[in-house]
Length: 290
Ligand SMILES: NC(=O)c1ccc[n+]([C@@H]2O[C@H](COP(=O)([O-])OP(=O)(O)OC[C@H]3O[C@@H](n4cnc5c(N)ncnc54)[C@H](OP(=O)(O)O)[C@@H]3O)[C@@H](O)[C@H]2O)c1
Image: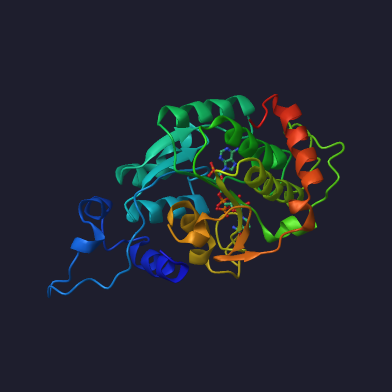
């Protein structure tokens, strides 16, 4: 499915879908017809995929889970604690599986990887969970996605949530506290690192499509009600990269904004910087990227 068709299909299938997930599974695209018997003009949908989305209790993670369920995909959602389970209840009622773990605690992040692996191999993982500030910004936004990448059985596609703010991140890794105990790195730093991680994984694992997505400044809890960008566009690219069979969605090493590739900060494609970052993350976690 190409980009335009994907957006069209997502718009009709998103929240308040016309087709419940069960119906989507039961009917092949070719067999669908309108009440008048004419062939339905809706574009073909991609084959059913299994997608794991971190931080799916609210915001872009929740919305991506909702769209993908509406399209008939299997979705594994994630919440930080049992107390947050109620936030995903509507998704569970629509067939999603749930995993639990606080990403600021690396022991819990490891256990989360175990839970995901127990559910079987994912086709795609969307590393979406994030925080805007506080001492945990590096551990949640960068270290946890690294650890999950290293420990979750390798999927075909990996998508990491970046931000336009990654452009003002620092390339000086000296003195960074990766544990979440001291506030050293900024949000911009964390997003530069996770964008670089996406590119490094694309280089190290040529059999995997690994990409970063800037969702735009959109009105979620993090973005705030005055955010100017389009909320639907804010989750469309990661959904498309996760499930579309469009050849462009099956490319790797990209930095995307609203379904278009853009040039990220130059450090993202600097192999030396990538290797320094991977070495720092390996030291911080004791876990290498195989
Ligand atoms: N919104 C924007 O304008 C914008 C712009 C650029 C990039 N982004 C990026 O897009 C991604 C999604 O953002 P959003 O706007 O949807 O944010 P959001 O509404 O604040 O949602 C963040 C999600 O991450 C989860 N999370 C945060 N810390 C966690 C932890 N320690 N353990 C487990 N889960 C944790 C949250 O769970 P709880 O509900 O339990 O806290 C929530 O599900 C983030 O990576 C963000 O940096 C957003």
